[in-house]
Image (cartoon, rainbow, N blue to C red):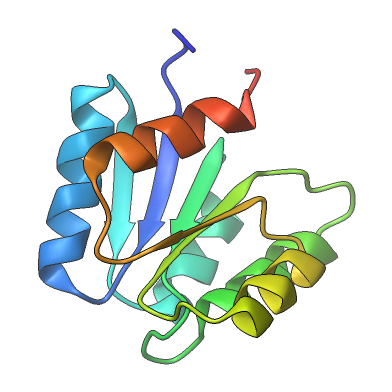
Length: 124
């Protein structure tokens, strides 16, 4: 993937957010970051993004609520990648049912993030 993506990162853990931002910027992508789901939804209303990376448990609105908001948008196909410390098959299945396109468990290796993004094969 050589295209520069505009990525929304919703992550309330500051260290995880920094790792995500650093990795994405190193890949050449533009990053918009927030530490809560409410602001994430507000940003989605006002920004055209190519990818959303979100934690599940966040203040105000969860990552799952963020996915639900996105999928209710008519024709919205923006890929969503979950990055969470919840490593339960039922959580992964529920996220997929809501429309998540991928799921990475924290802690993660930055290469795992790169591989997950490349696997999405996002065309802009």
